[in-house]
Amino acid sequence: MHVIQGQLSAEGKSFGIVISRFNSLVTSQLLNGAIDCITRHGGASESITVAYVPGSFEIPQAAMAMAASGTYDALICLGCVIRGETPHFDYIAGEVTRGLGQIALQTGVPLGFGILTTENLAQALERAGAKGGNKGWDAALSAMELLQVQSQLKKH
Image (cartoon, rainbow, N blue to C red; front, side, top):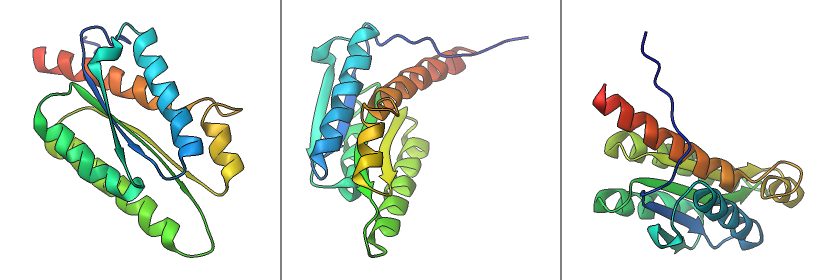
C-alpha cells in the first residue's frame, strides 16, 4: 500500500499571495496569518510575493496571472465578502469561488482558498484571528500541504 500525504514544510518554496484591499481590517489579519504560517514552516520571507487587488472579485484575475507566470510553487488567495442587504454578496462569493477553482484545475498550481464569506463583520473578525483561528494561516497550510502531495504524486 502506498500512502501519499503532504509534509508541512515551506522550505525552498515560493508563494504568491493575492489579497483584497476591500475589508482590509479583516484581510490584513489573514495576510499576517498566512505569512506567519509560511515562515514558521521554514519558508523565507523573500520567497513570498504579495499582490494587492481592489476587491475579492479581482482575486481570480491576479491569481491566474501569478499561476501563468510559472514563478510560484503555490498561491494563497485572501479576501473577505460580508453579506449586505442586496444579492451582491451571492454574486461575488460565487464568482470568486468558481474562478479560483477553475484556476487551480487549469493550471495545476496548488491554491490555498482564504476567502471569507460571512454574515457580518464580527464573524469575519472571528475567522481572521479571534475565536475561529486565522483562515489566512489555514489557507497557507493547505497550499503547502497540497504542494507536497502534488510533488509526491508526480514521482509516484
